[in-house]
Image (cartoon, rainbow, N blue to C red):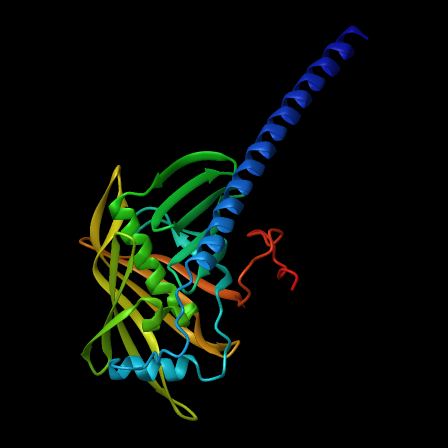
Length: 311
């Protein structure tokens, strides 16, 4: 029985170590989850506190023709004016250069409409049982990025640099096609016409200013529909090593559908235009969109829930 006792003792010790490690990982993951929930809560609280909507303002006054036509398409129904939006996404992305492999991800994206802000919380699967949690955000006029292995072990973070702030605000402006009310002039966006199908949008948040060129296209169906086909900038800061490099960047939008009285894209792609060739870095599909109009928000509404919050 001596040998059996020793084997059982070793197995018990290994089991105890495993349970301890799993418990520590679980605790760390819970802390990361709560940290993200607090960022989302802050986003929604600040969005409600800083709401600048001016009822009665005509969003089409002095707008370039393609922008007017786009708004007529985007709000073809009679949608309510939301204060925030929750978007569920799935797709693939690349970490590395043009030859790197695609990795699947799922994400929940929160954004406020009347003041710029978002939190994008994604789980990226690198291998069976190996995933990282990625959180990109723009809250309170400040950009941030955080990566955690298994959603528990921090691997890196960045907060508040001018380059990150500008890149994050550009992202908000590009993704506002999912919540087009944010693109109206009364919500801080100024428009400058370039030609019959192109206009430049500029948005300020605190000390940060972001501009993107919007390219519109018209599709003939039951009637003419003008949609955003792509957005572009010649310089969006891209994280390289320990710093940032200004790099040409394009967001592509397609497969428009009506969601709650809005015409929004359900598929998209992001491309960095590098010297060595284009890096298609992100391809995503919207699986669910929920527009919220109430001023407050439910604390029980968490980023990792697939169910809508109670009304």
